[in-house]
Length: 273
Image 1 (cartoon, rainbow, N blue to C red):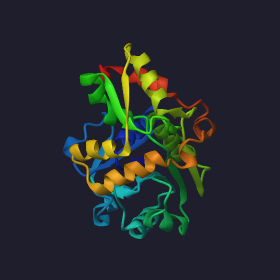
Image 2: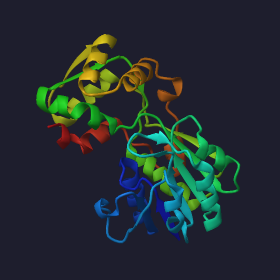
Image 3: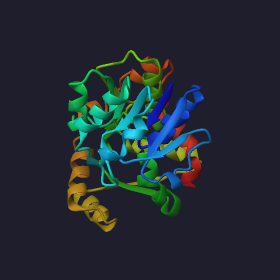
Image 4: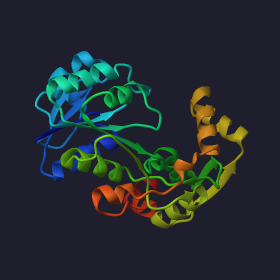
């Protein structure tokens, strides 16, 4: 069997590729820039863009299952051509589809629900890897993390666990029509994350809790647009229950416990030193 991974050069996509290879499967990877993909030997890399269905025909040929993302481009805009993509999948004889997305169904999810494909939606809560994106520079250069809402709870999930679920669903099947929320094994407050990261890198990390006004000013200084800033204030300040409620999906699908934030921190400690 051959499995296609879209978003194959992204944080989760690369790991889905790795999980499928480890399972002994043939892997095809879709990327907008094949020359820069830098994927493992043995992966068939093809060019294409989910935002342009006209580029996708060859990518789906001879494929048993496809891992999809529900956005296109660097701005994370929702896919607008969901129905066309699903038609191409059906015409190519694809059997199973996983979709890495959020908790709001867009055109792709709607089209899949109306199709006869075996589809599974994967809705992870906060990625542990966001810690690297947001905190690494502050820890390395100043030894301090500055954020609002220090008491905010999150059941964040390891990106490798997201990939492991996607690969298992694609290879084994039997998960059609299901929507899986993916979390880690515990819900942690922001201040607890800081402590565990400090333990992993072997030094104490300071934490400065910002007011909402201070956070807005800081993020604007990073070049963020107003819409993004207000989204962060709302999401971090009003995290929905699903974002801090631990569920056993990772273990139920993969057969092993979800990885903890402490494990993630140890694996990525060098990036914070």
